[in-house]
Image 1 (cartoon, rainbow, N blue to C red):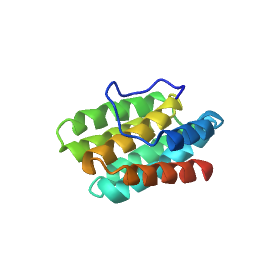
Image 2 (image 1 turned 120 degrees about the vertical axis):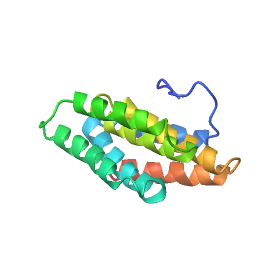
Image 3 (image 1 turned 135 degrees about the horizontal axis):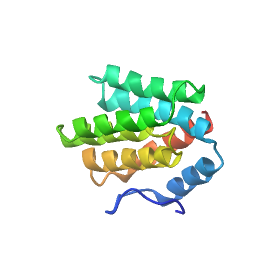
Image 4 (image 1 turned 180 degrees about the horizontal axis):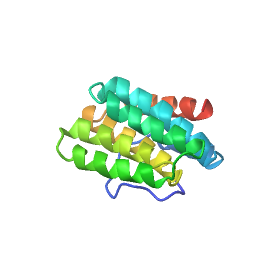
Length: 150
């Protein structure tokens, strides 16, 4: 792993798949990572954030508006700040899912947020399914598929 990680603590991961994801990620533009983030968001929403449709829509809109030059990346950072405040008040699984959403909102700032969102998904899987590396493997394979099909 070459990029700066977001976690100080350990996450249980499948390093070979993580490295494959990173290799693809490195060659993508920020706009392509923004599209990947939207796809990842839709997965997270369907699994963990069904009650947060309006917030998910705002994150998607920020990414799409930034892609066409309608807004500055700061709008995403401002929304991420609000999402992270909300996350602190939630149960652990929703907290982590919202933090993924906040990372996706910040992709217009730097594409590293797309990587961090992906690692947060692994952290979420570790939390809801401890010691189930097969689920981590599945999510990394999904991330690879999504990033290839941005």
